[in-house]
Length: 91
Image 1 (cartoon, helix red, strand yellow):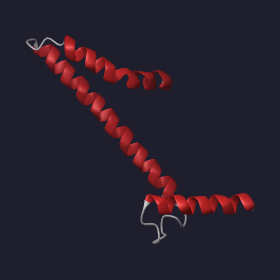
Image 2: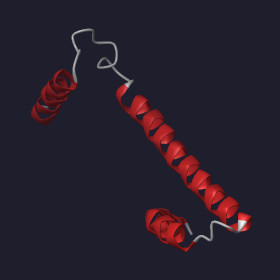
Image 3: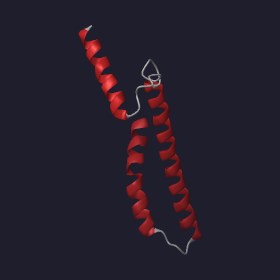
Image 4: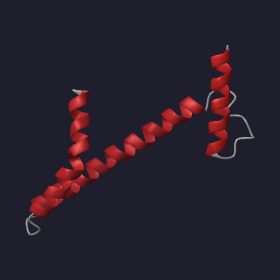
């Protein structure tokens, strides 16, 4: 079931593009339906972004990397993670 929904979400931009050309702009039902579908898809994208943000903060907010003040850029975080991986592989 989840796989089907993921495939549907992946194809929605193409469906929206096709519907854009097929919508009868004089028919208010078509216009309201298209705009509702567009808002629905936008809400799905926003929820996915917020979920990914939450997961990222859960993953990288733990441990000493989240409290390290020397990390100012993403490159600094990458270097710290590489150092941590080298230390773990030596153990």
